Amino acid sequence: MLDLIREELEKAFAACGYEEKYAKVTISNRPDLCEYQCNGALAAARQYRKAPMAIAEEVCAAVGDSDMFAEITAAAPGFINMKAGGGFLSRYLNGMAASPKLGCEETKEAETVMIDYGGANVAKPLHVGHLRSAIIGESIKRLLRFKGHTVTGDVHLGDWGLQMGLIIAELKERQPELVYFDGTYEGEYPEAAPFTISELEEIYPFANAKSKEDEAFKEEAKTATFELQNGRRGYLALWHHILNVSMADLKRNYDNLNVTFDLWKKESDAQPYIPDMVQYLKEEGYAHISQGALVVDVAEETDTKEVPPCMILKSDGATLYNTTDLATLVERRKLFDPDHIIYVVDKRQGLYFEQVFRCARKTKLVKDGMKLTFLGFGTMNGRDGKPFKTRDGGVMRLEHLMDEIHEAVYRKMKENREVSEEEARQTAKIIGLAALKYGDLSNQAVKDYVFDIDRFTSFEGNTGPYIQYTIVRIKSIQKKYNERKEAEPGPEGAGAGNGTILPASTDCERALQLQLSKFIEMVDTAYEEIAPHRICQYLYELSDAFNRFYHETRILAEEDRVRRASYLALLRLTKEALVLGIDLLGFEAPERM
Image 1 (cartoon, one colour):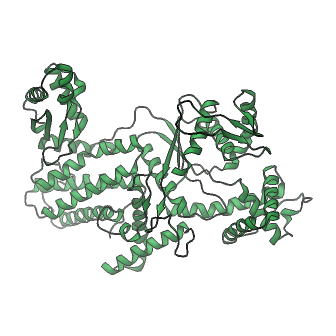
Image 2 (cartoon, one colour):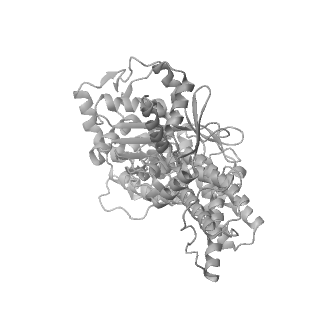
Image 3 (spheres, one colour):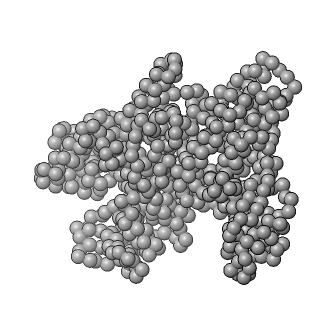
C-alpha cells in the first residue's frame, strides 16, 4: 500500500522538477488528520531553496484527480496529508484476497538460515527458563520460511558437560553392580536403560547438590566426565541411555508447545571437529598461550569496554563452551553451509556470544559474509518482578506451568457455557497454548515481562484468546450464512466471502479495511526487525477493528445482497489474515469457544 502511494507521489514530485527520493510515505501518526503522510517537501525545501509549503502545494496539484486519494492536501509547514480513495482501497484488498500469502512477496535474496533455539540440557526436565528460546525461535523460523528462506531449526542439546559425569558417578554409588562400571566387560550392553525419566530427573539435582558439599564426589564426577569424553565403553553406553530417555521426554514437552526442530544435534556432535580446529588455530597463529590457557585475542580498537580473549583450552587442556560452540560453527559450515545463523539465547549471554562471533570471524572458521546474529531475550518474571518461581521458591517445570494455564482456561470455559468434558479439556489446551505464546511474543523479545496468568488467559484485551475468539466469531457468522443459504437458496451466487469487497460505506468498515491493508507492511517489518511482537500488535488492532465493525454492522441482516456479499468477503479476508498471523506465532484457533 505504501509502495503504491509512494510511486504515485514520485511521479508528482518528478513532474514538478523535484527528485523522486522526497516522495517517502508513512502511515500518519495523526489519524484524526489523515491516513498517510509525506514530509518530503520539508527536506526538498533546503535543496531547492523554496518554501516547503509551496513545494507541498505543487505536488498535491500535480497528483490531480487520481482515484488513489479521497483527499490530498498540503498542511503547514509543508506536510502532504492523504486519505486513500475508497475504490483504490477496496481494489487493493480484493488483490490481497486473490493473491497467495495475501500478497506478501518472498525475498529476492533467499538464504540458507540456521536457528539455534533450544539449548536444553539432557537428563533435566524443561523448566520455565527454556520457554522463551523455544517460543521466540519457533516464530522466527516460521516467519523466515514464510518469506522464502530455507530454514533449519536446531535444538542443540547440552549433553557433554559435567552433568553427565555427575549422573554416572551417582549411578555408580547407587548401583555399583551394573555392568557399565565393569572395566573388563567386553560384551553387548543392555538395550533397556537402568533408569526411568523420573529417576533420572531425581538423580541429577541430587548429584549436583552433593558435588557442592562433597569434594571427593565432585572429583569422581570430573573423572567420569573425562573418561566418557575419551571413549570409555560402559560410560558411552550409559550416555546413550541418558540421551534416549531424555530426548523422548523433551520431544513430548516441545510437541506440547507446538515447537518442532529439524535437527536434534548435541554438543557432543561437535567434539570430533575440535582437535583439527585447535591445531588450525595454533598453526595459523591465531591462538597463543596466556597464563597457561590457549586463547584468541578478540578485542578491537573501537571497543568502549573490555572484551576478554576467547579461551579455547584451559591450562589443563580441557575444552570449554567456547570450544564447543566454535566447533559447532565448523560442523555447521561443513554440513549445511548456512548464510546466516541466529542464536535465540538469554540476553545475559551477549558478551559471551560477542567473543565467539569475533573469534569465528577473525580466524575464518566461518565463510566471508556469513551473518551471525545474537537475538537476546529478557526473563519471564513473576508478579514480584523477579524471575518466575514456584510457590515454594523453586524453578517451575514447563509442563507444570502449562498445566496451570490449561486449568485456568478450563475453569473459565466451564463457568461461561455448557460444554462436554472432553471438548472443554481439548479446547482449553488450544487456548492455553495461545495464552502462553501470545503473552510471551507480544513483548519485545529483549525486554523482561511479568507472567500474569489471569491477564494472559483473558478473552478480552491484548491476549491470544482474544485473537482466537475473533477468529471463532467470524467462523460462526460464516457458518450461519452457509446454513441459511442451504435452507433458503437464492440467486446471490456468493458463498461465505466469495463476493467482491466494495468501497466502505461506514467509518467502522473503512477502519477495518485500512487495518487489513497494513498486513503486508506488518509482515515485512516483523521480518526485517526479526520481531514477532510486531505481528501480535497488528493482530490485536485488526481484531479490535473487526469487533467494532461486527457490533456496528448488520452483516447477515443486510438486505442489499451485493453489499452483504461484500461484508462476507471482508470477513473472509480478515479471518485469513488473523489465521495466517497466529500461524506465524505458532498457535491455532479452536472451532468454537
